[in-house]
Length: 135
Ligand code: GTP
Ligand code: MG
Image (cartoon, rainbow, N blue to C red; front, side, top):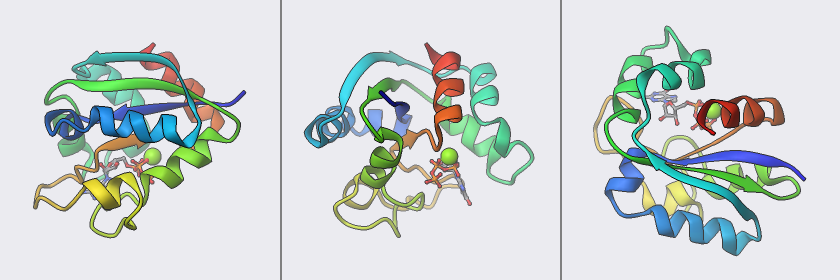
């Protein structure tokens, strides 16, 4: 069945939201196939975020993502890519709807980068590419 890469980003880790995010994934009915906690290194982050290279938020994004531990999960289930992105909500946590992870648990902290708690792959090819980077 389908797989996606979920990251509870360093802001989520620091705020103690890892369990809450994983709880929501399991409550939705998806399976946790693999889990690891690590501080992402800049080299792998550059691969992971290659599509954003050159954008104004790219350097702050790499700084933020390498700022501390994050939890990486391989999540499995039919249509879990679309399903997790619905759970996560909009990229901007201020605009994300209540009921979503970012809408319920996130906000704008006035930083250069959107600290939005989670990452979820956006397509099957990205999921497999990203899983190969981190696992
Ligand atoms: P989606 O927008 O739902 O695809 O979420 P995403 O987490 O996949 O976002 P995307 O891949 O577009 O960007 C990666 C990360 O870069 C986001 O999660 C944010 O942390 C950050 N980011 C993206 N767009 C912006 C932006 O316009 N401004 C700022 N400051 N940060 C951004
Ligand atoms: Mg994305």
